[in-house]
Length: 195
Ligand SMILES: [Fe+2]
Image 1 (spheres, rainbow, N blue to C red):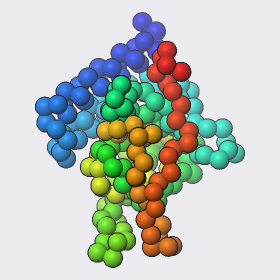
Image 2: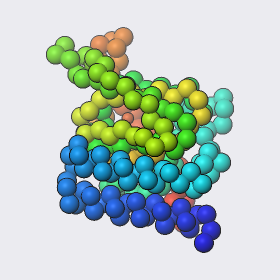
Image 3: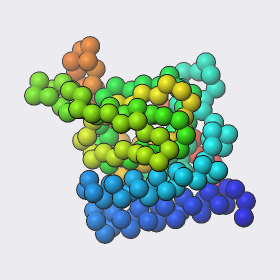
Image 4: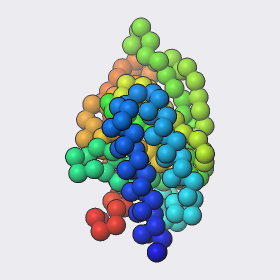
């Protein structure tokens, strides 16, 4: 079996397990922990997921990170991406409007967690560095920001594909305002036979 076939088999097996977890338990913080654990198991296959397989954008371009679509159901649910970054990538605090799980393959991604304040701002309530063997998970309205300093590869999984998420909000502290997150502009098809 070649590397692409093996990678596809491992992704398909993880997706089947994740669909089964959702079907059995629904989406709760504890079922998301199980999904996260299953993705950590997939991410342990560092031989199948490298920055050579999923290169980040060329240096000097507009974006520091790009996403490779690894899996997505026909109804756009259960979307799994490989996030490849050069580093120097930071986001404001935002929600997802669907559940989300991030696990590390290589490199480090600092996640900062927030509560929405009574004044409609944000207050940091914790941090976690996502790296190989660890991850974070979010319910639809949970808030986080990500901070990537050096090259990294990780998995981002969403209950619904990013192109379907039109009401994600991010916080602009300088204006004390929430705005709709623009759609990600660099998602690359990585499913064999689908490019
Ligand atoms: Fe996010």
